[in-house]
Every structure is written in structure tokens, then in C-alpha cells.
Image (tube, rainbow, N blue to C red; front, side, top):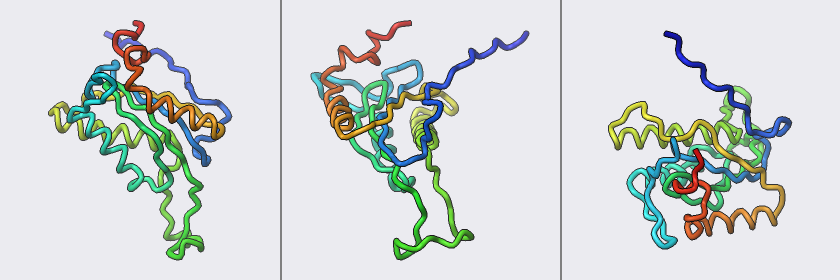
Length: 181
């Protein structure tokens, strides 16, 4: 019997946009089937469980692994993560901080938004599946939402949205009661 074909999925990325250029991005990463895997929200307070704490920890340590990024506001919700991540100018520098490295010694870190998100999702999946003893089980949806932050006003509005997200949980499009099949 033939395996059913996967539906062709269109990319939701901007066609002509270079996602490894320096800039700030708002991202939303949802859990597989938007399962409330990461905790709960009670009266606007986020109560992360062990899996949610893994997500928070892996997000925070990303800057130690991926030196081309800067983290800004973020929130781990029961079934998704909202965050602002900035990609810095990633020209390699030498020991003085001023001179370029010799090409023979240069190692290029993952530089694009997509490679950062893929690495983050992979690391979280590995840690959560070890915790749950569920090797190979999906933790995240296949893709993620992104928005290129265009200016300071956009940045401030995005920060406010993230900060207020736990209080707006009942109206959130990612809340299980609001997900349309």
C-alpha cells in the first residue's frame, strides 16, 4: 500500500528577504498539535512544568552557543513560545576584537534565523524526550511564525504584546479553546 502524500506546504517566509542579515525578529513557535505541554497559566501567572523549564533554559543559553544572536523579550506559554531575537552583524573578529581571523581558523556559526530556530527546537526536543522517555516523539510543529521588526515602535509594541500574553491567554489564538480544526 502506498504511503499517502504529504500536502505541499508553501513557505510563509518573505520571498526576497535575507534572513541572515542583522535585524530583529518576532517569532512564535508552537508545540506539536498545540498540545499544552509546557505548563499552565493561572490568573496571568505562568506556571511552567519541567518541559516548560527546559524550553526556558534552552532559550536563555542560546546566546552562549550562537554568538550571532541577541535575545530580547520572550515568554514560554503552555503550548507556544513568543520571542524577539536579533541577529547581529556577524563578521568574525580576532582576539583583539578588531582584526579579522585568518580564513584557515574561521568557523562560521549558524547565521540565519531559520538555523537558529532549528537548532533551538532540536535541542529542546532532545531534552524533553529524554525527560519523558519518548525518543523520536515530536515536540514542535514543523514551522514557526516570524515577523521582521521594522522600527523602534514595532519593537516596543511587540515587547508589550509578549509581556501581556499571559493575561490575554483566554483570547489567544493558540489557546486550545480557540484553535479551529
